Structures are given as structure tokens and as C-alpha cells.
Image 1 (cartoon, protein in one colour):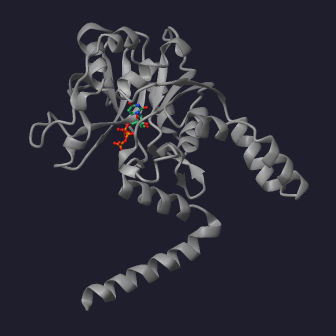
Image 2 (tube, helix red, strand yellow):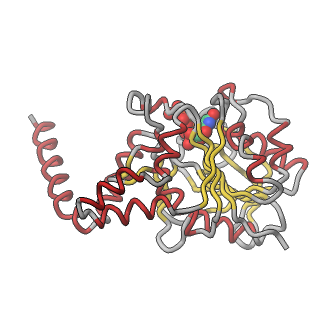
Length: 300
Ligand code: UTP
């Protein structure tokens, strides 16, 4: 029987160049979806999926993220004095969300390298990896829960979440190909990071949720710099296929937002805001007014 997945790694040490200048002094994982930082949404998903301990991989903005998930006694004291009890409840929930520890990636050498930085904190057990700029709305069925369930059914092989992307978009993703089994899982035989246009082996793209067995550690340790001069997680996962317990790609259900990209980030903000009762109606009115004004402008 495979061990239950109780630990997660969340890398948040990238440069976030697509969000400069906003990400100059603040990590992009702290940028809000309405009023909640993306990294908090992702940790909430992990907790709902049964994760008990989160290892954050921080970079140069280490303190902003650590402080967000810690108690802020001065602020809490002031809020209490002013009778702001709702805000106090919200803040203490964030501070008690999960057992969080953080490690440092001293240089942004790639996602694979960031995950490897968490090796000692995780140890010899399966680990969930969630990318904090990939938001996932699976309703009652959190993305990572779909994966941990699949992992328990895959005999110790790793599992990655995949979604079919539109033709022509494959070059933006890690793409997998393999044999589809009776459960609808794909036993991965081929994997390529950001294939040049027209060369992708399929349209099944890896999205930012993984459950990896302990065999990933030696695979990461022996992975050389690949695409973009970075140590790629995809390259290490390839070693699971060739020399390890294997890898399954799990088509995942739900809505995914690429919050690491400007348009995806705006999309996520609108979609999450529309789910808030107090914002839905006024936001729809604002959007309608913007649409009308822009339609008029384009007709001039
Ligand atoms: P991305 O490639 O989306 O993030 O990495 P980035 O490099 O920060 O963003 P751009 O492309 O420059 O705008 C996916 C996740 O992996 C983390 C990032 O923080 C992000 O959450 N990451 C990436 C690291 O922690 N370390 C790295 O060296 C690279």
C-alpha cells in the first residue's frame, strides 16, 4: 500500500518577470485574487485535500510570505481595540491554516531546483507539489485531492495533473504522451517541456499539481540544467519513467487559471469576484458599462 500524502511543497522563489514592476518588492504569489493572495488560495486547496504540512520554498522575498502566514500581534491588537472582529477572525484563520515551514532557494535555478530545496524538510515520503501561480477551482473536488486519490491507486508511481489545451498552445506547457488505461489515466511514455510549435507529441499539458514519490529526490539531484538554463522538474520526472516507478498523467476536472500570466490573473480575479455575493451584481454592471463603452469606441 502506498503511504498517504500529508506533505506539500509550494515553490515561490521565481523571479516573476511577467509581473514586474509589481513583483519587484513583493513576490508574485502574494498578488491578490480580489483580497486573498494566490498562495493562500493554493494552501487552502492543499489543506482541503488532506495536506497537513506545507514546505514553502522562498526566494528573496522570504519575509513577505512568512509574515502573511504568521500572527501579526500588533495589527491583531489594534483590530481588537477597534472592535474589528470579522477582520480579526479572518487573520487568525490565515495564521492557523496549516503547519508551514519554509526553506530558501538562494538562486532561482528553476522549478526542479526549487523542489529539491525542500528535500530534507520532506524526507522519504510522497509529496504533493502545488504551483502557487496555478489556481484551481474544482468546487467540492480540490485539484490536489483528485491527484492524491489517483496516487493511492498507482502503485507508487508519480502522478501529474493534465488538461487538454487548444491546438497551437502546446509550446507554453510541459506536454505528456502515453497509453490511456481503463481508468482514464495516461501511463506516461514521453514528456517534453515547452515543445517548439508543431512538435508536441499530444495536447495534454501538465498543470501545476503533482504527487511525487521519494524516487524524485535522486532524479532531481542528477538532473542537469535544461530548457531556459534551468533545472526542470519535467526532466527529473522523465527519470521516474525511464528508471523509476513510472508516472501517470491524470486528466483533472475543474477550472484552472494561469495566474502567473497577466490575462489569466485578470480572468481569475473576475471569476472569483463574481462568486462573491456582495460583488457579483455591481461588478457585472461595471463590466457591462466597460463593454458598452469599448464597443462604442470601436465603432467610431
Ligand atoms: P514560473 O516560471 O511560472 O515563475 O514558475 P517565474 O519564473 O517566477 O515567473 P516568470 O516566468 O519570470 O514571470 C512556476 C512556479 O515555480 C516557482 C515560481 O515562484 C512559481 O510559483 N519557481 C520558479 C521557483 O520557486 N524557483 C525557480 O527557480 C523558478
